[in-house]
Image (spheres, rainbow, N blue to C red):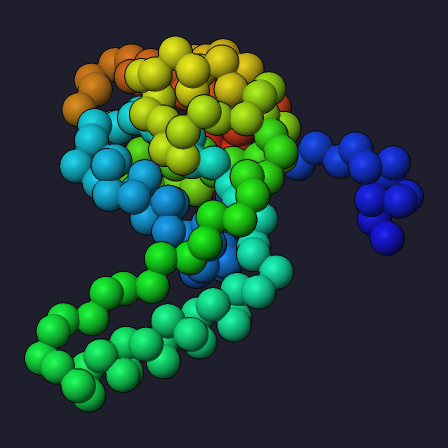
Length: 166
């Protein structure tokens, strides 16, 4: 209904909680978060968003059944369920930004689709996808007089969100 009203053109960005993401997107998002866990303040990465497979529940149930069957017949270890990456969402993704904590931003306003599921912020393709970089001045706790400057993805008001929420 919303897409009919806005003629399929709604651009948004906002912070998102990891647990509110669907399992398909949590798979690569967790990998991006692991990459940044021990990084310095200001580090970021871009994670491609995916559409949920129409038969997701059925595929997950089949995997669970296979794992139960394997565990009852042998002592082999079970394999974790990897959600099917059905189709990349057009110009959508999550920016994972390292501040005092990891901050997740969802946006559907990327300039282009990321060529890989996870791109570090130092990658030129990631910078291009998020419309370039914008300056962000933050107190990290080590400064005496001036704030430290970082450069993060400039997608719409991403940097303003960091100023307001972190």
